[in-house]
Image (cartoon, rainbow, N blue to C red):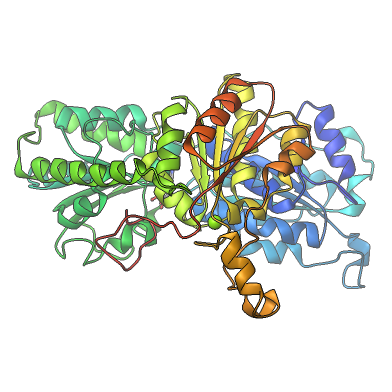
Length: 547
Ligand code: ADP
Ligand code: MG
């Protein structure tokens, strides 16, 4: 349970700890909600976010929206004003149940204390059954300390794990036949596949049928990025010329350019695998729809290819075209990374970070260029080990996600590291969570890739020149942030380690020290060229995620 206590939920946090629930006190409800939702994605069981009435709940809405957009389970518990004072202008009164409806699958207030167990059961069940999402439970202040007889409350056992559904057999046969007849096939692996723990089956399908695959940003790691069949480095090419695309838990939204030309062939055949029937057919008319749990459906597909073995010819023109494109794209990135000029560019920074990242670490990533470029260089080898701005493109998620990953790691695999790579702007949204990190002594390594601005910024001299022409409110471009800010001092203020780095050597050294120290968090503030951008793109529309 993550949250911020106050009237009227203080006693709920105390009681939660008494029954053995871990409680992590955060500094902003938004970050608390991001953290709770990341626990849901990482473990398949919803984390809880506990907030106070009115403004507390309203701050949490950002986290709820983000969770719901990402299809991640989450339970938000909000205290609310005294029910007897409703509509009278009570302290922090707000129509909370109604407010949460847009941001959740389920939003309710128990009618009595006796009804709390069944409402909680329903919220937990709704959050993980079907398409996962956020659920809200409202607890009026007068419920918190009211006493009832124990035997008047009917305790309800927690729900069974989500039922597993399989696709129609005829659709599975049809899908297998469409795949067999493909000339330029492609599998797209989304974060739905990661959430479903479908890594084993999908990997088997890829290897048995020798199919190229492309992970979406958080689909990275379901099969390791360095797998020979991963065509991530030829993303645009793979999407543009594929004639059959199988979507495993990935929506045809902006991240996948809606499945439409010019980013795809007009007659590309989509095979959609999803647990949510309403998703099937969004934006395109699919050739085949496989409604069911990805894990189960992948097994159904594998049965087809076991019955009549088939593989896509590894020496096909399609494989050759993809391999060539990957080679040339990788060469461009390597060239940019090897640039010796200072300040560093993004590629140089990520190249040095990648060299030292432990294979099993969690990578949290946010920021505009920082995230987009970072995704192409930083490798994931394990499923559910990358957390980023996601479907909603939310900046400010990084610290909450990193805290969640560190708490999960502490439980499962102590010693496993969490690296959070954020732009300077993204870091600012939740910067005070550094205190939370230090308070719980979570050995997170925070990298702030600092270009003094949003998208781009200015060097200190240009900034000073600019201010000669007037007050900053009049002359400073809206995307600028204070040049050379020492974000690392936020970390040292709370007892963690801080580094201010300007050269590759300083970056290597500080990262080595940060990773070696498993007892303390650190923040490495990496100064880069304020005008640095991405390598030239083939497409200039929808540039987000089109690397
Ligand atoms: P990405 O951002 O990686 O493209 P999306 O969030 O767009 O991924 O898509 C994830 C999809 O996975 C959602 O449409 C969701 O309904 C689906 N999904 C989640 N869990 C399962 C599951 N167990 N089986 C099948 N589909 C699932
Ligand atoms: Mg920036």
